Image 1: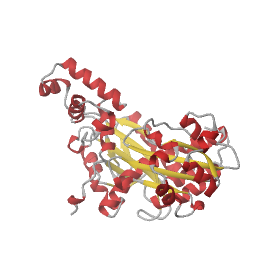
Image 2 (image 1 turned 180 degrees about the vertical axis):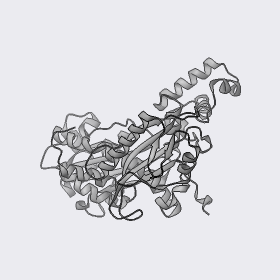
Image 3 (image 1 turned 60 degrees about the vertical axis):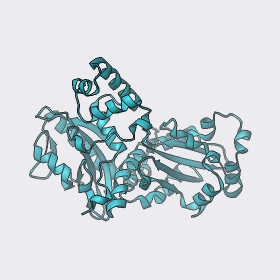
Image 4 (image 1 turned 90 degrees about the horizontal axis):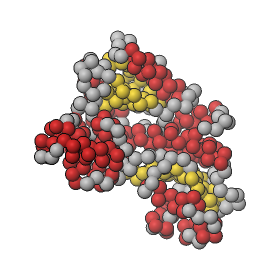
Length: 389
């Protein structure tokens, strides 16, 4: 956090939540972000290892429309900026090119062909970047580049950039689902029923104005979450009801440039005793599909008991699971108990527990619910195009 937050910063945070529904606004957002960082340019590069529809490459408008094309055509990945190495060790927080390469001599750095091109053709030399996503499902890197006439990023500029990272990260995460819905079904909000996670869109006054079929199913269960007669989303538990209301309020005020809360993640207990719902509350903005100047909240609800949409495909490669760990991971995500897995795999319960411990450690999760959430991020539960009516 830095001590010079002003309304200009708050306004930009709000605009970042345009991006899930309007990815074409990335350049305009970066055009505002770069001057705040005193940078010559800013850019965003995202590579989705599961869905090619989610690849993103965009830079500020001042460097011209062919900048990225020229850069990629002249330099293969191994000769590009060192920030591509961030995919191996994701971390959030701006670091410099020299820090990434573990160099203390700018002479060595200056010999890189890509840096020579940037300096000669665009008067750019220094750079800094941060990963947004900390998991290995996809790689998204926010970067800034500085004029060759000045030094590298300052500590104050790092603090300013880091202030925005949680918001860029959440917006990028939300964008994956909406971009995929748009690519497959020619719409985002109009295709929410194709997305098998509960989704509630809440207006500026906190009322539910849009929800998908999975959200309807969750509400119909009347098992910990409900929508009142005045169209407000409530948790049955009194304490969780207050926390959910507060989370929704923070998300809405952030969308309105009055707060800085990127998301709230919480659980909601169920009267049935089933595993709690996983609830994520984030800001969202819209100027077309919902209504002009819409500033509200987006609520995702994951039901860990609904295992028919959960698949662990791809997690073995992403997280370095062994074949046995991968098979146990699949069974855990499907809701199988330790005893059931032992019977299915014909191994001891202690062996199953060891496998589960290894799976949770490698995936960075601590329980089945978090593992399910991760699996749903790896393989978004969205209908394939063949299921189009």
